[in-house]
Amino acid sequence: MNGKARSGTRAEHDGIRLSVVVMTHRDRLPLAERLAGACPELGMRIVLDPRPDGPPGSFRTARAAWSAVLPAATHHLVLQDDVELCRGFSSALHSVISARPRDAISLFTEWGSRTSHGLRIAALTGRAWAQVTDTYVPSQGLVLPAGVARSADAHLARAEAEGEPDDMALLTYLDRAGIECHACVPNLLEHQDVPSLVGNNEMGVRSSVCYFADGPDAAELSLFAQGDSMSDIDFIPYFSWTEGSAHFCVRAPEGAAEWHRVPALRVFAARGVHRDRLAEAFGETMAGLEAEELLRERISPILLHQLWLTGVAHGLRIAELTGTTTISPNSRAARRAVGTMGAGALRRFVPPQHMPGLEQALDALTRHALQFGGALTSSCGPAPGYSSIAHGIGSIGSSPIPAN
Picture (cartoon, helix red, strand yellow):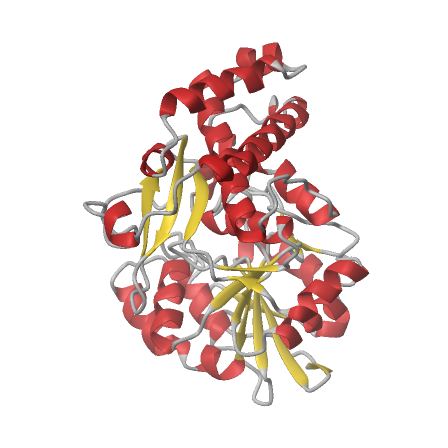
């Protein structure tokens, strides 16, 4: 049974023939069995770590899982054992695959990742998809076209020998294969907060950017079907949850896979928005919040300012994309995605027992920031070209700059 999938049935719908496995370790087998039993119509098979007594790591099991594609499958889904499926998961899964059948599809994006910010912009602009912009593939639940999955092991074997993490190796493989990776919003999975076998607990709570236990509603399923992805934006704001600072992700010129990161204040300055103006506006925002005292008591004002800058950057980019300066999260997906920005950004800086009492206040801070950012468009200069904004900044993928 080690390294091999238990036999199961194949899920077929509208020409999509699914092969589904859950990757796990023998110490977490009950988790995997519970997950497989949550959606029996998918015929999930369980793939165990082939060397359970070996050094801690997920790569061995990932390789076995990606190699376990059923012969007649059109698509292969690998689930990690610590996820929760939304209600109606099987139907929603077929919907997202039907919308983007040639792409890699991430069904979960953690709330502090770079990709989560692309999904927030997508939700706020009436889309349900965003291209993955992290240095790894979000792989708690990842769908690949079956042929792409079958061909992955040769690359993954080399990457494992070189000590590369499996989620980063998958991204490199997909880039070289010319396969785009997109994430959907709302997510179809939630990450359960269970002890990590590979040392990921130090990353803090990694919940979904936008998840509903009752599954996507009719409007969200309609947006899934449209397949319109946030893949045409070259400047994406995000908050580094490792450093506690606001940045922009800047896409490299056409033909290069890398993104660069630039401090948000540098981008604002290049667009004619002085830091003093931003500092004054931040102070006014804080003074207008009912929970100002609570926020200042629990969170460093430096972190609050950087989170606010991230929200301002979102508002600015959304206004430029839509031509609307009033930024309001009208859909439930947009409201949820905006509401998780603070918790996702600050999960390593705020004790987890304090976060539930702060989420509403952080949501209010973020919404005010979005509005200020939207109003900035009338006084901002044009977005600078890549060469001027990224000069001297190393590639995220190849520099020692932290990945988050």
